[in-house]
Each structure stands twice: as structure tokens, then as C-alpha cells.
Image (tube, rainbow, N blue to C red; front, side, top):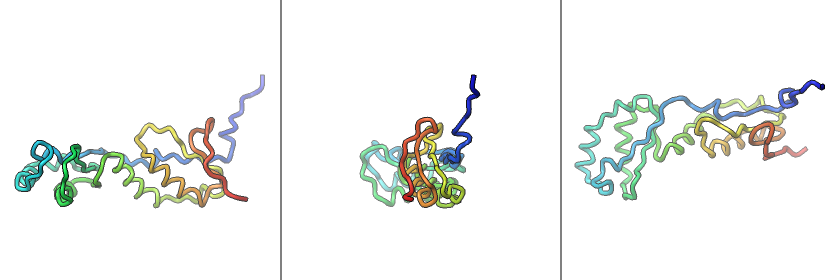
Length: 168
């Protein structure tokens, strides 16, 4: 019987795994509808009082996304005011949901990476992840890798989808 040879392990294929760059930390959504009358109406005096009395220390070192879960029309100053209360405690604050937050984190991280190890090599952007890597992070990653890589695929080595091949 012939020995089984792992051709993937012996190839020049480089794996780019976005999970490797997923920042650890608690992600929290703050829903401002909790401070609106019946979830829809912002009464400035009541809103300011509720923010003043809220325990902001619970967001210490969290990554925070501020959003409104109702269809309320909220003035811009309201989310900015919430930010002034939470930002002394949070690591990062964004307007949106957790996906928007993760996108913002990758927007900070991916430009700082060294892509030179991928120069003229076939690269596979690992597709299956256990962490909630946003699709937008894959789009950012392929843009960063494309000037360096000989080719780019997406998925797993056993079933990769070709995305890009540098012209010869």
C-alpha cells in the first residue's frame, strides 16, 4: 500500500486566516430605545437624566455598538451624547450593530499587517471560522493581499474557490 502524502502541507500555499486577527474582548450593543418614551419618543430632559443615572462602568474594556432597535427617528446628538458617557470606559465605540463593530475593528487591524510574506505565493483566505468574522473583512483582506499574492482562493484547501490570479 502506498504512503499517503499530504500535498497541501508540502505546497507553497499560504493560508490567511482572519480569525488570527480577531480582537479578543467583549462586544456589547447599547440600544438607546431603552431611554425613549415607549421606545420611540425622545424627551430630552428624561433622556439626559436616564443617561446620567445609567451605570456606564459595566462597559469597562468592552467594544460597544450603539444602535436603536425601534423605528424611532433619533437626532444625531442623542447617539453622540451616549458616546460621551460610554467612551471613557469602552475600548471602542461605533454606531451600528455588532457586525458593524467587527467591521470597524478589522478596518483598523488589516492596514497594519505585513503582507510581504505572501509575495508571489498562492494564498487561500480561510473561509470557515468559529468567530463572527464579518464578510466585509474578507473584502478588505483580498484588497490587501492582491498586490502581493500570485493567486488568491477562498475556502479550505480541499475545496477552494479561485478568486484571483496575477497576470504573467
